[in-house]
Length: 78
Image (cartoon, rainbow, N blue to C red; front, side, top):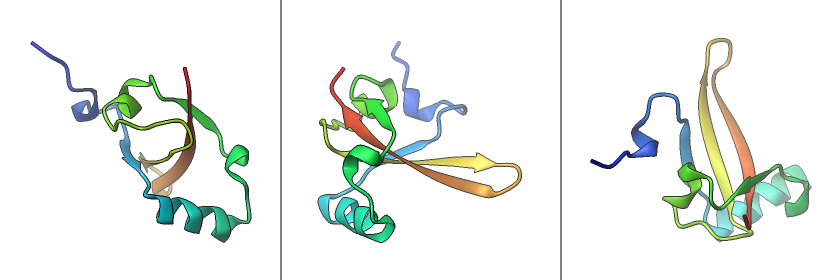
């Protein structure tokens, strides 16, 4: 029996951004990639996306007050 972490009710939706989406995000907020919070490529929710160091992950969380919130993390080794 295997466990699919992305199907668990407490794990928010994780999505790897394309290179064009990543560049658009960085341009829109006038930031460098190193300014983003980090997430390990070994994180179970990231590992299933086959993300590599330097990729950006969009995380969508449900919020009681805001409805839905979006966070971005840059993938790092280990």
